[in-house]
Image (cartoon, rainbow, N blue to C red):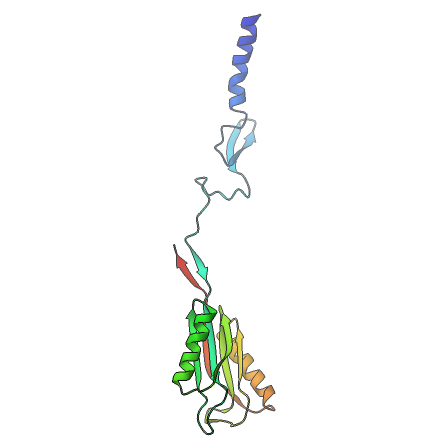
Length: 179
């Protein structure tokens, strides 16, 4: 009797070992009735070799800023400073302020800070000259064309429907940095 139980246990051992169809980790058995195979577990995130793909880098935010002189001298051009592709809002704002001062600005202030976008300034007037006393408009958007369009549209609204032209435009888009 003892040898019968032992013989029965030995006969079942190989069946238990192949209960999963001899599939590697991350796979499950498919098929039946003579057709056998293994398929990856859905949503397992593993590639063909059973290892999840590793990221090769990361996207880093980039900031831009525009600063303007809030009290320009009569008859003098408006001092404007800009910065693009900076790693922080503080760095972009500081650089834009420095550029505004270099252009002769006495009371420079950051007018617009933006990140991973484009920006534009539209001034009242035509390409032949800016209208004194009008209101310039700064806008930001996903693309350069959108930012320009918004700045011109809002400039026209702010200045009674008169002509407006883009005086500045740039983008500070996120940058991919490899590991």
